Length: 615
Image (cartoon, rainbow, N blue to C red; front, side):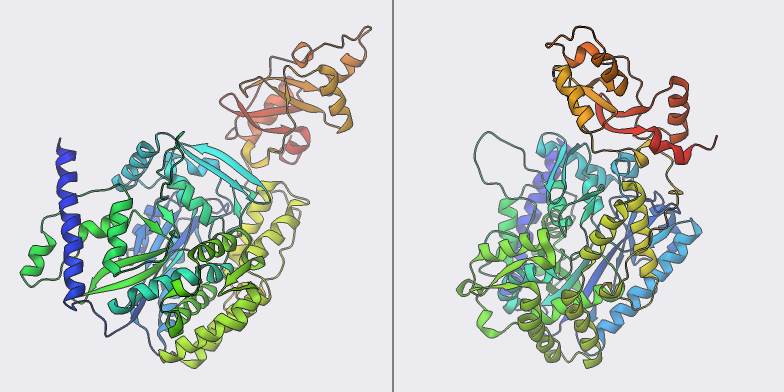
């Protein structure tokens, strides 16, 4: 009953907040005579083994700075930068503060044998790091997890397809924690908000295509900016249904151009999205206005914070004055501070350089083209072909010939220092002509995987990201290829770090002749056997092939179940490699299946464990 009362009161405050916002817009109370920028920097913490840390709270305590706050996972923290006026050397100011705060974080992390890494998705995040023991112990995060699962009607599912495929079910919202962003804020005059918001939507695809940095997740090569699909699916509260119906995702680029005023954007979100979080609010917003005070619109801001538009309309109060801003949420963290500042200047320059003919985007572009550009940019990054005002252009042509001139003009109009403008926009130009972070990551990962196990390659890539980030003013287009030193991975100690996940599996009801023939053709010595439910139920080895071939009278109807070993000893992904070696020696096994529950997830062989056998 108490929860229901709180919810009802919260809804009343939400409706009052909408009325208060409309009143402030109508009476010209929104701050329109100054433009500010701001940013939020999310970053990863890794331990001395290049794997996700659990020590964010300890590091945060050591930092002891109100600019820092926790995130959903215990391997992430966030920096909230101070807003600055958009003029002269503002980007240098933001860069200076960000660099200083990251240096402060790195010094605190070092006390706990941790390091700071800027990347869209940390390559070494594995299934283990998505467990509840890696969730930051905060009631807010637990509530978000429980409510999202309740609304979905079950566990979270990921189904992503790129060069590789990833299909997995999980019981927590921690998939969302894999995403690390550099969120950029731009204050917008209330009279220009709808035009600016629609322009922000229109340029999202082109801007993203030049900034991709997250092609890897759980060792799979997926989208150039996998965060886009991952974030949508990881906090998706929509349940599946037999009915064919349209449901709005909580993470979205939207479905149409905005109309009306900024208040109408918030109204639409109240209408479209169920409440996830509520809280007690003491003062009514309309009462505050009547008393001559500026309301915080606490209910509206809390609800807005649970709707993850890639371009999010935001209301805030600074220095006693209410303002509106657009938050750009689709840019990944990293790979360097300089790259991020280049992204920031590019986006802000484009926003302020909007030609007047694009004040009404509906006259120039079908919204579905803008949405298509965004999704395609996330999928293929710099290789995307984009729709732009009736043309089909490559990213390089669109950015260099159409958008960079607009960005230069936008920054010139705001009197940004010419030296900063040329430096930052020059990085964007060289990047789209050279290599993006996604390109660098994939090129190096593929090269390393030619000779290394997947986990070892991911460790090497993560170390390479960190090492390059320590080199001052070396943007991604100048990063060199990583060298493969062929050393044993010093941090691999669990079976999951060395197991093979590309498996050939047979069913117990397959013909024995077919299974043994395929094993010979493919020169496979160990094949796990599954039943109709997908549970592991046996193992075929080269020994079985020899026995089968030596049978005096081979029964053509003999099934795999008739010749396989049913009593198989298995290990789990979190079994220590040393223990697996001891078992294999004791049982004289040439391989050992790796399971989660009854489901097969990998296999290790003698060849895999030899580098770790010190006996």
